[in-house]
Image: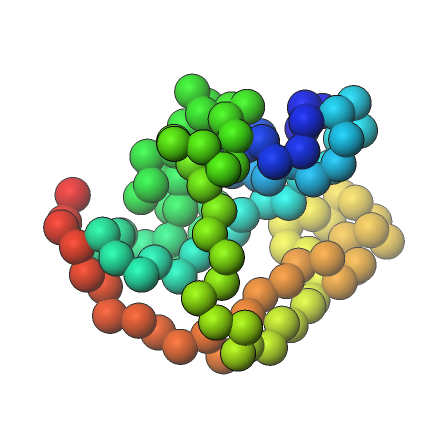
Length: 122
């Protein structure tokens, strides 16, 4: 998380699940965005509605820690459409953070349409 922006920060949580974060600030300042879900357009048939499931479905593990997010292994694509509404709410699973747990720092696309799953089963 202290690395340069535009890189992956992948860590293991609960000794079981990998989590993917996008580093967002200059090197040396710990700031990143946890990728909690995605809307697969093709080739993903497993659930991707949670950070652990997302990483498992996309085969993201700690070997990708530090990978560029515009590279051959991982990349972030621009939204296919800007016709959506963002929503924000309180964070989940961080009650230990006290008042910071109530901050509206969890974002999602409101009423995202469900797409049919395509691709090959794994």
